Each structure stands twice: as structure tokens, then as C-alpha cells.
Image (cartoon, rainbow, N blue to C red; front, side):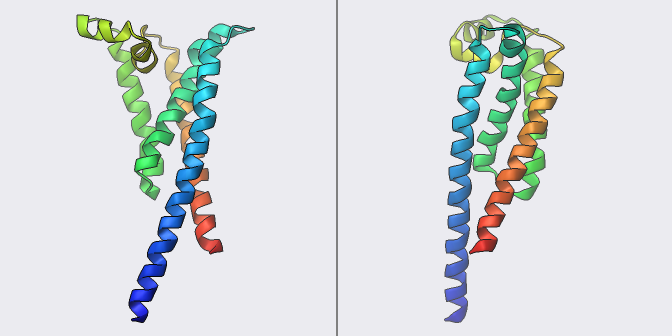
Length: 152
């Protein structure tokens, strides 16, 4: 009986920790998504950097947070930013390829935002920066989850 009680309490704590992390992930996304669009459509001084490169940093952070919503292990904190960077680099190189289907997708707003339209070498350092910031963000989210767990 004692073992069952411990198991139920442990499961409840894990669910609450998971719920708290989910809330912080959603709050993070509610910050990152508007900031990404703000940078993408900013028209003030240095707008080209904000539109092209600043937005790319938030793009990387967004995908790190999105993936962390589903994969929350300690190992995922390192693996997610690496995979986000690799996939983003593949998408960047795909911009050199112009088959009709990809061109149709890129002609839409969502296609433009997700796949991009023009290959630029200078995007890569910004992808690195965004992935590193995404990794740091995930580490903080993980710490929040553990802090909540240890306080209970």
C-alpha cells in the first residue's frame, strides 16, 4: 500500500512539473513568435538586418521551444538545438534548388516564412546564434521544472 501511495504521489509531482514546464513553454512562445514577426516586418533603422538576420535568430529559438514541448529529456536540451540548426541549414541549402513544387510553396506567406526564398551565407552565423540562445532558453526551462520539483 505504501509503495502504491508513493507511486501516485511521484506521478502527481511529475504531472505538475510537466504542467509547469508546459506553461513556461507557452509563455516563451508567446514572447518569441511576436518578436520574430516584429523583427521580420520592422521598418526602422537597420531594418535589413532585423528583417533578414534578427528574425532568423527568433526562428531558431521558436523551433527549439516547439520541439522541447514534445521532447523534454535532459539529452533533448542538447540535441534539439543541434537538430534545429542542422535542419535549418538543410532548408537554407534547399533555397538553391528551384523545382516548381518548391517555388509554389515559397510563393505563399507560410512557405516564405518556413522555407525562405534566397540562399545567403550570412544566415548561418545567425542560425548558430539562434540555436545557442535556444539551448540556453531550454536549459532555463529545465531548471524551472527541477526547481518546482525540489520545492514540493
